[in-house]
Amino acid sequence: MIMNLLGSGMFLLGITLLYDLSGHLLMSNIKEAVAILAADGKYQMPLTVVIALMSIGLGIKSALFPFHTWVPDAYGYSTPTSSAVLSSLVSKGYIFMLIKIYHRVIGLDVIRSTGILDVLFVFAMVGMIMGSVSAIRQNDVRRMIAFSSVAQIGYIFMGMGMGTQAGMAAAVFHIFAHGISKAMLFLSAGGLADASGNHKQFRHLRGSGFRSPIAGAAFTIGALSMVGFPFLGGFTSKMNFAMAAMGTGDIRMMLVLIVLVISTWLNTIYFLKTVITIYRKPLPEASYPVERGRRGFCFNASLVLFAAVNVALGLFSQGIIEAITNGLSHFG
Image (tube, rainbow, N blue to C red):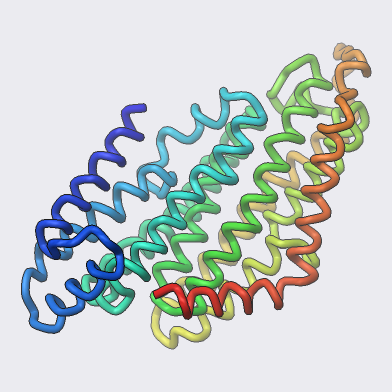
């Protein structure tokens, strides 16, 4: 609650200052006024402060590193359904709002001139690594997935930080790909925990993939997508980011490619370790009733649907990317 209020307060303060500078609250009118101010070179520092307040405020609410400290507890201790909604929809809504502000309220050219995108780019790079490192250190599957979300949010802000249309399109596509995969991971982790006496530690999850087959299969598909396995949404996302980086033509190209490789290695360590764990032979002293792993039809159907959408994002990504690119070109 404290972090949420801090982010909301900074965002509202940015709106107040922007109203003071432009004299408008309608998006189109604000953009026209900001363009005039930028062309005349007036109020450059106040305008930079406004953009920084809005960016950091929404960065806090969307769990951008290093403002992510609320995520592990919020995602790790809420119900599986709540964690799925928070990770896939709520945090992404704030990112979409920030993209909309950049395009329709301020203007991407003005945003680039302030250097805010460079700051977001650095935060994203560090977040992609540190989120994965923190995930590796976890013994609780829900907290591991939560820290993985921090790394994946870094992917999105990395695309935004490139400052190009291709980078922004890759970021928007990753919003969908990550939202689908992460919701499936949280739900399936809940099913695996139920099949393990409601334990979330890895040592108790051994064999849970057999006790809850659909949850185990869904978790495996989600994990492979996050790692970047071909024909899944996560693979297409990483390819989009790499191709967008190749188009920048500066040092960001090498930074993106290097961090993508390191992040993929780290993803592989903790996700495949978990997949191996849920299909390992249970501990000799462990005894879990199989009935606890049998969930209702709606639960199983939702996991199957999430898995199908994930595969669809991987196989039919070209049309989706084109639609996103066309939408961004008309966003202003």
